[in-house]
Image 1: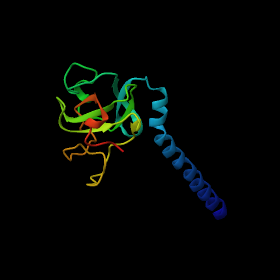
Image 2: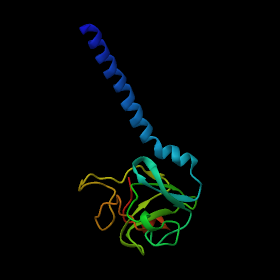
Image 3: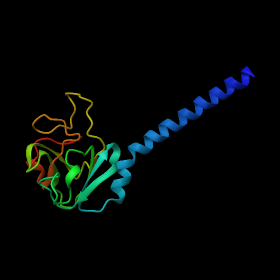
Image 4: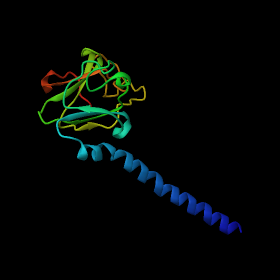
Length: 156
């Protein structure tokens, strides 16, 4: 009986070991999969990491994600944790800390395609910070398309 219980325990651990990496790989592929099916010309925002939990998308700009007009509205403000850029103009998308394009910015270029997570775990050396030093996760309030040379900070 002991041998049978030990064998079942080993089998259970082995099965768990194969499930966890597969789930992690699936989550990491989320932005790449979403990029493949995204509409060309749009920028997308997601409330969770790995481009999960679609907030909205637009080929345009929005100076206030928290108001009741434009492509992003109301609770969309200060909610994005991952972003996707499928623009066709060659421009970068500048995301701003405050509405009206204020409070610092961070850009996502066409070449980067997406930022799968803006979470920095309070790491002062995290790269995804606005030009004013604030972390970008859950702090985006406006965005617009800009020439890449207008960007002072880029997502990684």
